[in-house]
Structure formats: structure tokens, C-alpha cells
Image (cartoon, rainbow, N blue to C red):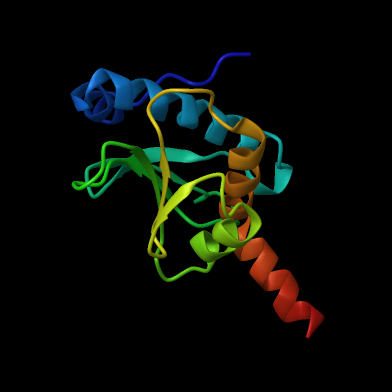
Length: 142
């Protein structure tokens, strides 16, 4: 089954990226949608723009933290951006110290060429899409 069409405003932003970044980020988009679909508790994602970047929200269920796609001004990598007030990037860094390049507590950077590390990236996306569920579970366990 194919992924849903891009909303018009999101499509315009993807089209504005240089082709190598656009291709990499569209691959990440596919992985975000597939990862969300694999977790029933995530529900339907909202695909929109936040800070003029493609963003993926779990508005239906509130299960996760927003994931944005873009690039950082000082980098030639594609960037997956996360809320810097979460522990997500620290968790990714702990689990996959050598797999990705990171920026502070807000971004995971991907090179524009080479094979996308789908298994590791899916694990990171899954953690983001279920971030609030995981935190609620920890609070209940205390």
C-alpha cells in the first residue's frame, strides 16, 4: 500500500529543498508513516508545517512528540528535528552512538547518500511517536 499524498503546502516545502535533501527526507517521510502504521496506539498522523518544515503530529491520540524534517543552516545533511525539551535525542545517542550524527538535544542528521539505516531509524521514530505513552507508563509504574 502506498503512502498518502502530500498535503499541498507540505509538498511545496519539499519541492524547495535541493534534490539530494528532498530525496532523503521523502525516504524518511515514508519511514515515519510506516512506523506510525505499525503502532496502533499512535493512530493517524497529521502531516502539516511547523516552522515552515514538514511536521508529523500524533494529534489523534497524543501518543508522541512532533517530528519535523528539514536541514540545519550549518550542515549539508538532512535533519530530523525533535522537541529539544524531550529526552529523545539523548536516548537515540545512547542507543545508537555511532550510527547517526546529532545536534544538541534537537536533531538527528543523516548523510544525503548511502543506504538509510532503516532499522535503527525506525527505532528512533517509534520512540518519538510513542514518547508520551512511554512517559505515562513510567509515571503509572512509580
